[in-house]
Picture (cartoon, one colour):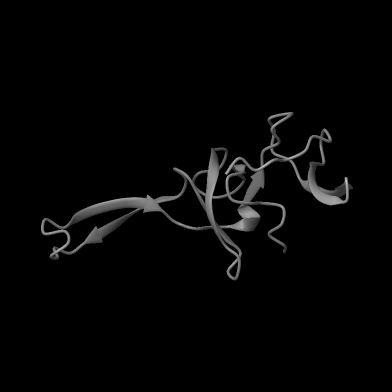
Amino acid sequence: MTLARIKKGDRVAVMAGKDRGKIGIVLSLLTEENRVFVEKINRVKKHLKPSKKNPQGGILEKEAALHISNVMPVCPKCNKPSRVKMKMMKDKKTRVCHRCGGTFEVKA
């Protein structure tokens, strides 16, 4: 599966898992593992031992990676999750919504 359909800064909808139906913004991608980090989605708690840096220790809540097949880009024009197709526009490949034909633009 190629990662060209999802880029950093895209709005994506979660299609499977405990956060199904939620929408968030892509924070980062792990291309080798086909995983994506989405803002405020798939939050996990990490227990930290006391250290010099953090003498109190405690519980840190952060985002965990989701598999790329479990998210779908949200079209900015029709505001619905849709598949992405690639189209040549002005000698440049552009991501286009399969549902309405609107283009995806990264705002990162």
